[in-house]
Image (cartoon, rainbow, N blue to C red; front, side, top):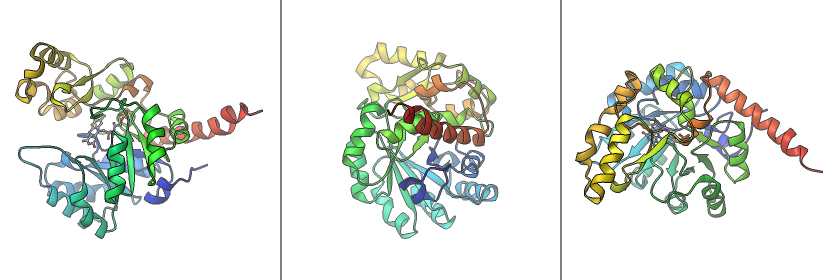
Amino acid sequence: MPFKTRITELFGIEHPIIQGGMHYVGFAEMAAAVSEAGGLGIITGLTQGTPEKLAAEIARCREMTKKPFGVNLTFLPAVTPPDYPGFVDVIIKGGVKIVETAGNNPQKWLPALKEAGIKVIHKCTSVRHSLKAEQIGCDAVSVDGFECGGHPGEDDVPNFILLPRAAEELKIPFVASGGMADGRSLVAAMALGAEGMNMGTRFIATKEAPVHENVKQALVAASELDTRLIMRPLRNTERVLTNAAVERLLEKERTMGDKITFADIIEEVAGVYPRIMKEGEMDAGGWSCGMVAGLIHDIPTVKELIERTIAEAEALLKQRLAGYLV
Ligand SMILES: Cc1cc2nc3c(=O)[nH]c(=O)nc-3n(C[C@H](O)[C@H](O)[C@H](O)COP(=O)(O)O)c2cc1C
C-alpha cells in the first residue's frame, strides 16, 4: 500500500522516498531507476560540468522514464563559480519540474524556477536554515542530520533531535535525510515529523547505481564506525569513508592545526570522484559516505530496495508497533 504525504502530493510520486543528488553517482541511470520505482530520482547538475551536457543528461533521463525526476543544484563557494545561470536555463528548457538545491541560500534562483512552475526542495543541516528556506519560498526542505554522507554542516545535531525540532518550527513539508536505509528509517522519520525520506549512500549500493563495483563492495564491507569528518578546520566539514588518503589528510589536519589551507589537502580531495566512482580506485581520496554504511548489507535493485522499504514500513506500522497497543 503506498503512503500519501504532502511530499508525495507535491512531487507527484508514488512513494515518499527521494534519492539525493550525488556527485558522480547521480547520472540519468540512477535517477531514472529511482523514479521508475516510484520514488524521486535526482540528476546531479554540477557533475555534468556544462549546461550543454546537463541538457543532454536530462534528455537521456527522459528517454528512460516518463515519471517525474529532479535535478540537484549545489551552490558552493568557488573562486570561479560554475555557470549557474546556464544550468538553471537548461533545467527550465528541459521541462524539469523539481529542483533540489543545496549549499548556499538559493534565493537568487527562486524567481526563475518558480516562474517555470518548478518545485524547489532545499537541503539544510539546521533548523535556522530550514526556516530561511521556508521564508524565501522553497516548497519543501530536506533536513540533513549529522549522520549524513557529504556535508553535515558545523552544528553536529543528529536526526533524533534535528527532525522533531524541524517539525516544531516548519510549516512546509520536509523529508528526513542522513542515516536513512530501510522501512525502519521511514517509519522513524515519519514519527519524528518528516513526510518522507531522502537517501544518498544507500542508493549507491544498488545494481543500477552507475559506479564501479568496488564502491558498492566497500559500502557492504563498511561498518557504522568507518566514516570520518574531514575539512573541519576549514569549516567545510565532509563525512567520508575512511581510506589511506583520508587518514593521511587527517594526519595533516592534526599536525598543521589552524594553519592548514585547502592547498595542503588538494591531493586528497580535488578531482578524486571520477577516479573512485568510475575507476574504482578506492584509496584515491575522500568521497562522501554516511554512517548508514553500517546498515548496508546487500546490493539489491533500486526497485527491490524501494519495494521492501515500503513493505517493511507498512508491516512495522500495522503489526509490530500496533501490536504494542493494548
Ligand atoms: C557520494 C556522495 C556524493 C554526494 N554529492 C552531493 C552533491 O553533489 N550535492 C548535494 O547536495 N549532496 C550530495 N550528497 C549528499 C546526498 O544528497 C544526501 O543528502 C546524503 O547522502 C544523505 O545522507 P546518507 O548518505 O546518510 O543517506 C552526496 C552524498 C554522497 C554519499
